[in-house]
Amino acid sequence: MKKFHHIFLLFFLSGIAGSCNKFDDLNTNPDVPTTVTPEMLATQLLKDTYRFWNVNPTDFGSGNLWAKHTVLLETNPNPYQYYYSYYPYGSFGGMQKLTNLKRMVELAEGNPTSSSFQGLALFMKAWSGLAMTLDMGDVPYSEAGMAEEGNLTPKYDKQADVFVEILDDLKSAEALFANGKSFGGDIMFDGNPAKWRRLCNAMQLKMLQTISKHISSEQKTRFAQIVASGNLLTASDNFQLAYTDNTNASHPFFNGENRRVVTAPSDMVVDFLKANHDRRLFYFGEPAAEKISEGLSESDYEAYVGAPTDLAADQLALNRAGGQYSLINKRYVATRAGDPMLQFTYAEQCFIIAEAIEEGWVPGSAQEYYENGVRSILKYYMTLSSALPGNLHGMAITQDYIDNYFTGEAAYKTAGTKEDRLEQIITQRWLLDFFQGNSLFSYKTFLRTGYPQFPLNPATSLNPESPSEFPKRWKYPTSELTTNAGNYNKAIQEQFGGFDGINKAAWWLQ
Image (cartoon, rainbow, N blue to C red; front, side, top):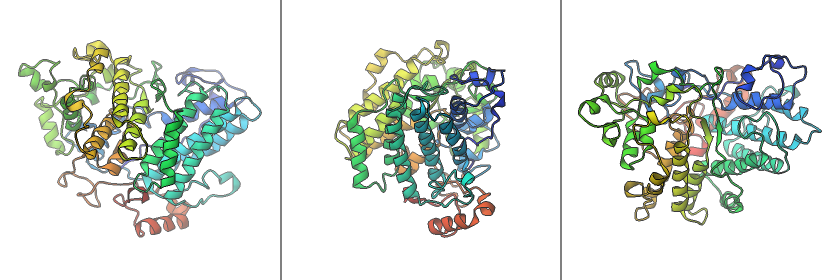
């Protein structure tokens, strides 16, 4: 497995002028600043954290394989498609940002925006900490970022404690944003502290649901209190990074036609969308050439065929040559700005709450939240500027279509079992990440819930430790063996019996 976290880069601000409020401003300003500002640091840190980890079509294509959204149709098997990686190690790079987050806060001291920058620093620490602990297990959190104080060997906190600390940091960040002012340098929410406050609350819900196997009664109460407060994301609050027409801020798949023609939506995606008569199918893919040759039209659901994610690579390539599969929609390579990279949406928040209602954590109508979540993401695609009519195969999403979506298989399964409804909710949540490049959390949700049901073929699995198992974590960075060996060895001994393996289940999955 390869780590899809953004690798921390030490940057030299001498090449950047002024505060940057737009993603592309950072890449075009030729002047030289005389003073580093908190706004500058905020822009750079946000860009490094939320931009796709390596901006090129090849790596972006690989970044969508783990959650089984897409399939590569090449004879050479890509490990990410078959449960392994070129580099199966995690990263503590997110915590290396703490030094610059501290600088950002220090530079804002005495300014009206100080509280907002403090909130941003805590939120970004929590975001990185969540990614690290889900990737690896016990991680340094409480002592992270203390190198300047002389602590070069931070202890590994127990994963249960890391979750508690992250939740506390998000709560503190929410309070800081509540007292904050609009601030510059924010490429995500344009410096709006009210939106950041709502995101902090929504992230607490996501965190608490992530530990559903171990959640305490007190934590369920906290979840319910946050929902009851109502200060959560609205339909206009999607937390996303917008790419631009600037050549240095393009969508990673722009101009990647040579990769598009070997990339298919998976059969899992296509079959679900067809069963639900979901027009996102026509936004995600192209009709299979073989089906068009048979006389089907591009607006016919049956003209679309997904590729099996567990089929041997040489057979996938052979079937592609015969035109058997749909390919990724041409729109993904056509516009430089492309689709924004969705990090946390109102729709996901709705699905989180719907699942919690089904589990009995909070009162309310799970059906209402489910339907609100689906409506929100459908409306997102309906208004998406990169979804040009010429690439939608005559099946554009309209308001009338949205109003009549919940029929047949798409209707909430009120007459079914609880498990039927949970599968429906979580599968819709899984689709939110389609071709976003950040699908690893969808894979983790599958590990937690079993939904949607991912295929595993031992004959094609590249999992070197056990081809019949789903990998559950990344290994710790190899540098820990030399720089923090004592704490590293203690962590793997206490968690995994001394073996730093990819199939070991950390506390949150036990």
